[in-house]
Length: 287
Image 1 (cartoon, rainbow, N blue to C red):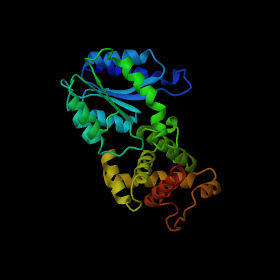
Image 2 (cartoon, rainbow, N blue to C red):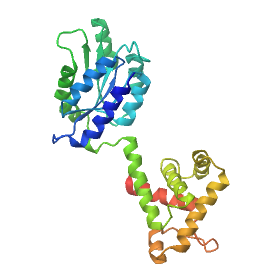
Image 3 (spheres, rainbow, N blue to C red):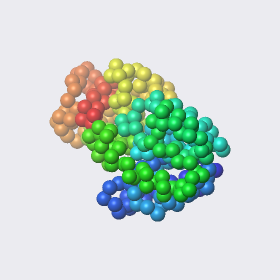
């Protein structure tokens, strides 16, 4: 149902860098099951430089995942979702139980004219705006105007000490961390042609995000990730480490880069020592 709209969302994201405003456009997630309404919002956004849809869905559970992963500044959600899955209530219940560095603005759209419903929304969920789709003048332009008018004030009140452009989605953060891990492994001399190279990248990334003493579980997780046996994971990683250690062009430079003690009887870092060293190094430098 949302295929055509999804294509437009992707195109909208690709064109983000072509926006000409000094301030980046306001990132919004739309949770709406009416394809016609989604198209109206997208068409309106495509004619502006200050609005960017980073996701659309007709399911409340998918909407929450989009909010977690895309870090929008605002969420526009249809209260009923009659043809989708879940409802605005389902989304709001889970949304307010979830921790966010910056909680986005919430806009409700509905066909319900009941003032009792509006009062409940404001009291129970502290909703910023509720728009009745049947009211005169309702449309995407009206919703966008309200969001943009409140944008600067809202973030001033959020005790946010960083600019919006510095916010990072989980995907962006992972890409940044993986780029640093790959750079470290390049300096160490781990060949990209060896199976152990990818194992090392994944092992270090997994270990960065968990307890230092959890190496054995990391290796077990790697067996599932790479669909192989535990011994293969250890052997591939060990081979990659020894290949780099024994064949490095500048052994003295390598020792300056890898400063942890190395047992003489082994002659190179063990897989556990290796991934712990780089997990600590990357974590210390990047967080």
